[in-house]
Amino acid sequence: MKRSRLLPLLALAALSAALLAACAPSASAPAEPLPDPAAYRPTDAPVSVPGVGEVGRWMITKDLVPATWLGEKLGGRTLREPINVLFVDRAARTPEEATSRLLAAMNAAGYGPKSGHSTGYWGEVGGRLYSMLPTGKGEAFSDGPFWLPNNHGRIFGPVPLASGYAFTGAFSREGIRLLPRPGHPYRSFQVAREDLADKLNSRSMYKRAGYVDMGSRLDTPTETTGDHDGRAVLLVAGGS
Image (cartoon, rainbow, N blue to C red; front, side, top):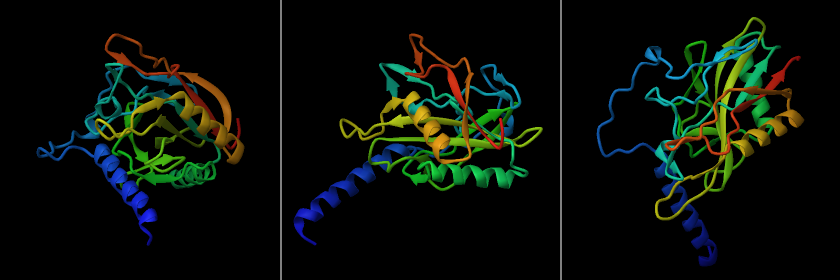
């Protein structure tokens, strides 16, 4: 291979390794035992969503606390990661069918599972925590590779309904930072939410059905939700 072609590949490999390390938990100390998800008690009141139930406002970490972008700060403030997408599949008859239909829709929208992301998150509905999709190691749903700016997110469920199943999701746009420390800085919650909704609406069985006010916009001296407007987009498959 010519040197002119080898150098960019080596640079990309080094960048990928640095970004993967930035997404991984620190190995400097022995890991503490993780709390039991069954012991989770929400710190904020959930939101009553008609036809779905009591939906938690935040993506939840392995430590059973609201996710804060792996500790990254935004303007010196803690950045909370909101639930900003709700999926309802009225046609799915089993949890397996609901999951299969959702995965097919995400792939059709160009948001298939991709590596290079942190995992182990949860979503809350009805006082219970639901594990995340996708389930692959280091995977999230994304519209591009992790070494480029991308829209990405995690989905939680399936949640059984009177007719069909629901999922919740947390989606955001991340950038790329090389210095002073490699990582994925926050760029937007709204951009990712709207792009995902538009792609699903045009390419899959999931169609836009409005928004749900989650009351999750934060703008305090110590905490923020960036450009999040406090709403989740509602996407419905199999009927209105």
